[in-house]
Length: 213
Image (cartoon, rainbow, N blue to C red; front, side, top):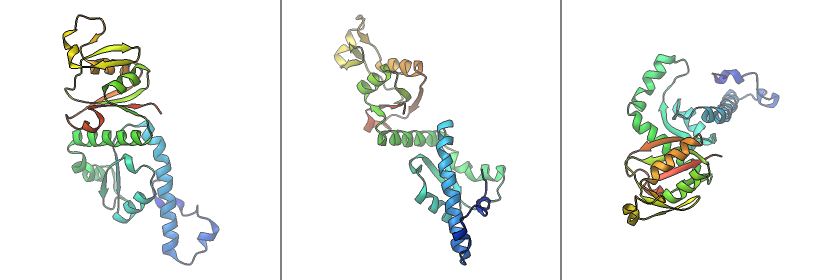
């Protein structure tokens, strides 16, 4: 709310309202409206961990891209005039963009991961992820499917990872799969876990943990 830019018609400064150029006044209204929307996205994105799509006319979407602080959160854009569109029309317009939901979700996860890295709130690689999870910092664990790592406890919040440990499964210090152990720790601290396709996290060491921040 408000659902329409016209809601700002009476919320413009006296100086702007006295301008004789209607097109400029309309530009001011549009920017004020879009900034209001962008500010409220902070609350919405924290409450709902879902992919974000921006729908609108080309000009409006282009303007929004310039002023938004959430560019890294946007999964995709749907271009068109939806000013008077009802729910069914919106569903129909967005359907092709979410047909491959798995791709949408994975794209959203990668955007969230990149945003966390920019904020210096992400651990990557099994050793760093295990350490962070052991300290209860895990908000969202993202791991490639079928990724497994044999390891051995080193200290309270560190592990050693070597293939040579695969034969030490009789030792109390042995971890048959450190990834499973990380998953348990993240869930125990109230975090979430998401799996992605193999190879998608190559640059992150096949596993990454977004920390609370």
